[in-house]
Image 1 (tube, one colour):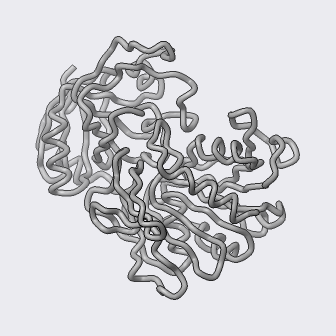
Image 2 (cartoon, one colour):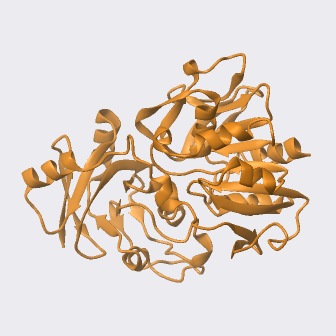
Image 3 (cartoon, helix red, strand yellow):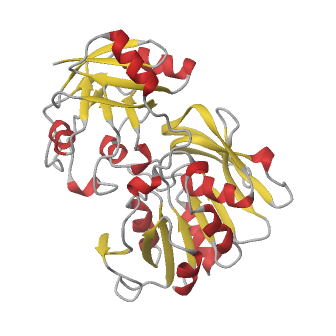
Length: 369
C-alpha cells in the first residue's frame, strides 16, 4: 500500500507500508546504527518521533522477547529502505512487521532513506506526517506544519512508570522494594524518566539492588528509602518542559551519589542551573565519537538525544566538562566539583553496543563505596 511522507518544509517522499494503513505525525529523525532495531524501537526516548534507519536492510534477524528495552514500542513510525520479511536467526521468535503491527506502529519501506537523511542533516529535524489515506502533498504538508513539535512538551509523563517496581532475575518485579527485589551490596533508586531495561540490569550485575520509581517521586520519599546512590535514566522530549523533577534533584544534590544518563544528564544540568538547547538534528546512532577529557581516550558511543546542556550557562568552578562530542564539540559529560554527581549525554548501557563506556557504571559503584 502506497504511503506518502511529508515534512513541514514541503519535502515529499514516497514509500509503501508493510504493517497496514494509517496516518501519524511526529518529529522526523534518523539513526545510523547498523543493528539493534528492536532495542531502538523499545527505547522510550523516541516517544513523539518517527525514526528513519540509515542502514538499508532492516528486519533480517527478526525480534525476540529478550531484546526488549521497555514494555512496548515508543516511536510513532519506523522508516526503512528495504524490509526483510524472512528473518534468519536462531533467536528470532517473530518478524519485525508483526512486532510493529502488535503495537499499532506504522512500518514504511521503499523510501529513499539516504535522500531523507541528507535532507534532515542539512535542514535539521523536521515535523512530519505519514499517511496511506491522504495522498495529497499540500494537505500533508499543512498537517505536518500544524503537528506539535518536541520543544515545550513534557513526554516523560507518558512513559514513566505509574508505580515503583524492583529488578530481580534479569527482569522487572512489580510491587517490589529493596527488601524483596533481590540481594545487593548497594541500594540504588532509579528515576524512571523513560528507563531502558539494560540500565538496572547492569547495576544488578555490579551488586546493586535496584528500585525504580516514577519520575515525580519526591526527594523526601527518596531519602526515606535511604539508598546508597541515585540513578537518573534517559527519557524523551524537552528537558526544560518536565514538571516537578528538577526541584527534586536539586534537593538531593550532596545527599547521595548521583549518576545521570541522557535526559538524566540534562536534568542534572538544569538542577545545577544550566540552560538546555535543541540540536539541529540530534545525535542518534551507535558510532558517535566522544573524548574523555580526563583520560584523553576516545570512546565510540551509542546516542539518542535532540537536546543538549549549554556548558556556557554553568559556573566552571562548580561544574566541569568531562566528555566532548568530537563531531560538533557539544557537551557529552560533566561532573559537579563539590557534590558526588556526574553524568553523560550518551548511552554507555546500549545493547547491542558499543561497550566502550561501561566503565561509567563501575565509576558509580566506586562513588557509592
